[in-house]
Length: 201
Image (tube, rainbow, N blue to C red):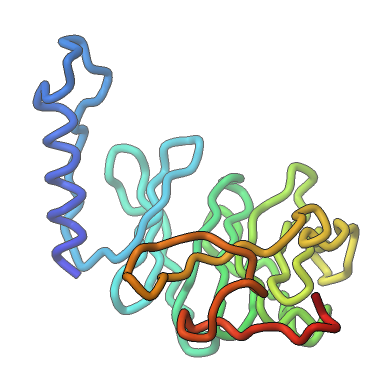
């Protein structure tokens, strides 16, 4: 946990130390944050959202003052991602439970969307705030990008993204150990991929 903090601090120091060929680098270390931080994000107002190891979300101002804390960690498990695109509507995504929690600027809960019960989305790979304050959800099982309203209703969705791709590409290892790319149905069983029946080709 502390390793992430030191890696980020080291990265910032490296970027500001003149390692780049430019002499007038625009990167400058403003401040370091201490604690058991496992993830963070920044909104467009400069507010910093820090996720601690105990799954607590803390909002600090650009000067480091603590503004709010979200402590409700009893229900949904570990936070998978934080979207602070709009500082007035912060999205927390709990991937293990396919649940989205929307927070206001004080980190109070606005609403909760359970994707499993409302839309039958069981494997959402990613979520993000849409330009119209709806929520984009990528449904990994159906390979569709879906726009969801605040009430959990389906607003819009794309076609199956797999239709845009000619074939599924897979990386396999040849018997001599060299990697090669092939269509999934051409890969040998030894590479860990199943050969499709003749009728499916």
